Image 1 (cartoon, rainbow, N blue to C red):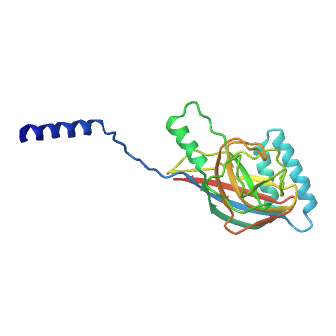
Image 2: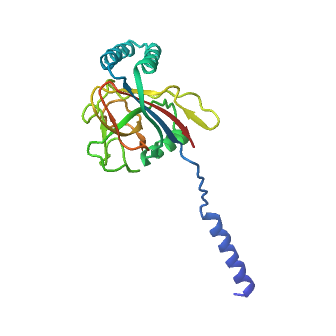
Length: 231
C-alpha cells in the first residue's frame, strides 16, 4: 500500500472515532442553602402561669385554623410578658439526599407540590451531622420531640410557609414557632418533607447547628426560626 493510501486510511479511521466518541458537558450550579435565624423567648419572672395559659389558648386557636389570630396573640405575649433570652443565625448543610431530590424534582419532575417542615435537633445521643444523613438514618443525632427531650406542644413538625422568591432568595413568609411543653437542650434544626414527629420517611433536605452552641429551654419557652434560602 502506498504511503498516500496509508495516510488516507489513518485519517478515515480518526474521523470515524471522532464521530462515535460521546461528548459530555458538566454544568455546575450552586445548591440553595438556608440561613436560619432563631430567637428564644422565656416568660418574665412571675408570669410563668399566665404565659402557659396563654400558650394553651394560642394552641386552641391554631387547632381551629385561626393561625393569623394565633400569630398576633403570640406577638403580643412576647412583647409584654416574655424576655428574649438569645438570638442568632446559622448556615445549614444540604444533605446528599436533599441535593438528589432537588435535581430530580426540578430537572425531571412533573406535577410536584412542595411541602416542607421544620424539626429540631436534640442533644440526646448527639455526636455529629453528616452529608449522608437521611430521614430514615441519621446515627449522629436524634430529633427533639415526642421521644427525645425537649418536646413541644404541636402534634406535628410545623410547616414552613414561603414567600415568593425575590432577588435570588426565597424566605419564609413568617417565623416557624415552637412552644415547648417540657425542658431540654436543643442543638439545631432541620428541614424535611414529612410533618410527622420522629417520622422516618420523606426527604431530609438540610441540617444546621446553632452557631452559639446548645440552647437550654424550659416548659412554655418559645423558639422562633426564620429561613432564607439563597444559591
